[in-house]
Length: 483
Image 1 (cartoon, rainbow, N blue to C red):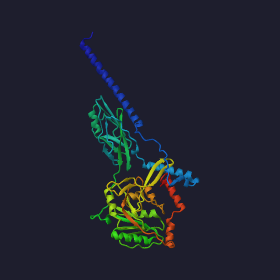
Image 2 (cartoon, one colour; image 1 turned 60 degrees about the vertical axis):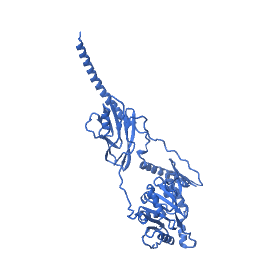
Image 3 (tube, helix red, strand yellow; image 1 turned 135 degrees about the horizontal axis):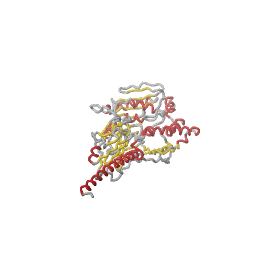
Image 4 (cartoon, rainbow, N blue to C red; image 1 turned 45 degrees about the vertical axis):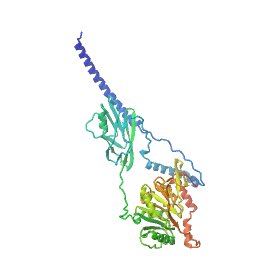
């Protein structure tokens, strides 16, 4: 029989053997589970997305209503619709962003992570801030991180056995203590591996049954483009007046004379597409000659493209400056609210401001409704409101306006179309306490020059149909209405 010492020795050997065996099995199970977790992480751990297909929009009734496909030749409609759909898909690819993904935060999660504000330049490396796990005691702690447009690493030396996947898209961490885990998490780095100037990576973070997703913005910093207002900050250093003329030289000269009454040294830019250009005299007047009858919006593009001041003031060539034409008031609004891109005034007391209500719609296209009025009051300026479009008398910042652009296909009657294209890109205000006058209409209908002007001023049926085609194709609309 064994004595008690032999029995204790046997039991000790048995316990040690069992510990080693179960340890090896545990490591195998952990590695297998880790591999399985990683695979599942890659395959099924994706953020919840808004997968709902865009639903068709409903066209709002109005005194003016257009179902746009009705104005396209029936024999061509099918091919036009196919071309439009192909271009629209390209548009969605350009405009889509990982930030459009719907992310859902789990309740009572032990995960700590940044939810916004993490940005990395393309192909550069940053430390991901504030990663940690706040969990009760566990025998071991396993965490997984997953990126798609970059790689993960840690700046902590050592821990070779605890960290798997250094420099890869998926990193797995396994430690025996929470302190070690959080020490490693404090120094996790993200390296952008895809060069895009503005996108995002959605990084996944998993511990046990808990998971989270947070965005890392990948963004190439832009250099500022600042305009020097001058030491004196005079209006002439801040603002250029722009206009477009066609045949109406008497009108544009009266406009310039009225400007000089109130602003003697401000720069004036005139874009001119008359058939036989005449010289426009005056100090600090820049006169740009265009191809004949090139068009209304092409002239706007040209005039604004030559502005070198912080703002430009758009006026029609038959307006008149009065004592109520206080450019300073519009500048004050723009300087106080830097996010504003455009602020309009009134013409002979009329502001013509309007709202745009847009629904993206489905495959058939979107729905656009234009109605009079404004959206909200502009804080700090009782006479001003936020709106979607304003009259042809407005102060604006050159760069955002040129980014939207004036479509040169619109060479006759056009105005609202600029604001259609700028919807969502331009923040627009309208102030009722700044006004400009309007010159009396020319009375001599027999005048040959006036007849020619009216010929080019009036929309033809072809021009009208072309405009509706642009709404259908370029703006991907199925209907347009207004009141």
